[in-house]
Length: 253
Length: 264
Ligand SMILES: Nc1ncnc2c1ncn2[C@@H]1O[C@H](COP(=O)(O)OP(=O)(O)OP(=O)(O)O)[C@@H](O)[C@H]1O
Ligand SMILES: [Mg+2]
Image 1 (cartoon, rainbow over the protein chains, first blue to last red):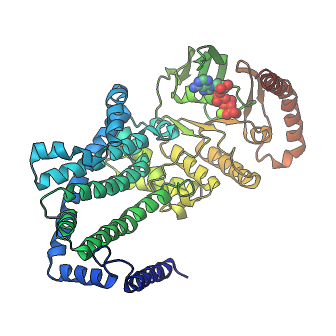
Image 2 (cartoon, helix red, strand yellow):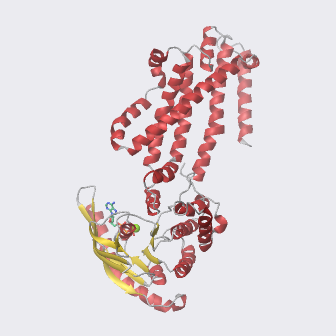
Image 3 (cartoon, each protein chain N blue to C red):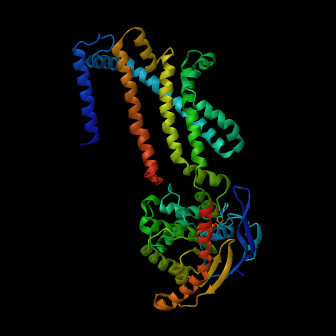
């Protein structure tokens, strides 16, 4: 049976069980509404475009923050990999920052940028930068010495050697970094938006919770999970798989 | 003299801080157009010597001269085929062979492409020009590596156990191919191996190395006409001779390892 069919059956069964249990009146609807209610609410939100706007706003925050994180993370990773002193000093700081949940930066963001979208983007940037940097650093440090030796015997040195051999050789790690930066950025985004003044999916979630619209809360949660898995499977998983295959690493992965 | 290795000693500082002598006072002359094999037990410094000639590392003492010029760094006048696969996996076979030509032929792309295709034909892989290395077998990858090294038209081809990881049949086929390429191009080849049959079959000269520390213990000229398959008996005789010389060295290695095992 194709994996897609299996998954479809699984989710349909899940919804049916949920609806069934709901109808047994085991809990009040304010705790957990029925899937039909949730579906209706999401549908209405999409139809009157409020959820669409939220979605666009969230994706905008994410894309801007993610792009900045990739740029800074790549440069930072290259610096750490190539300059020993930087690695020994700045490297440990980056490692420390990587283990700090990005929501922790929110008070700082608010102090600097106020309750604006910039604050949210700032959080996303911090969420993605460090994991990208650490992976880029690893990629460059782990370039097989034989590639470098071979290139040197073919008169490659300096920037030529770096951009034609070391950079492409580190792509598999970089791709992992990109994937993780996206995932971390997505989590950071939701945390940031929950405490923002909108627009965004996180903000709407908070708003729905404050006004007791439980169906909308569940709907947004499902939407967040759905988008997360969709981007991961459709874009990043494929990208990573293609790269690993091309680089001849698929067996090691 | 074409290639002249004189008084070369190479020492490494080990992790324990002691000095390890990998090569001691190596003397080796190679004439232009010669096919010379370096044969010796594992750890006798064959790769170390090759990397000194490639210019990838520097001797502690002594010098390596190529056509009278001291070798201080790597360069495209010496092509290297490594033991481990060294093709770039992100480039196609064609792009890999093109890689050393990019700068030299910047103004003449057409000629460069022709050159790449000629060399792929030489190793009989022109059909695979657009494949990626991961799509090729180990033997095919080594043939591409040979094409890549030859495409930049080096004076000297250095090969470090290029067929070491291949099965016997593939190895036999590639021997034939290498011999043919060598006769066609007239290149000087320095060929590292620990396979005695391979060395006797292919070389004008077999340089036998000993270990602890690495040194040259014998330099044999193989005066058999090619192709040599017809002189099976003569070859076996030479192989036996080499085996006798090497036997003592191999004993030494094994004894060393056994005593290490007991003391460690
Ligand atoms: N960078 C290094 N640091 C310390 N010791 C080294 C280094 N490179 C090589 N050696 C030592 O020098 C000796 C010779 O190594 P080399 O790789 O040249 O041997 P080899 O003859 O090529 O062996 P094999 O047939 O197994 O490839 C070995 O004992 C090895 O441990
Ligand atoms: Mg070796």
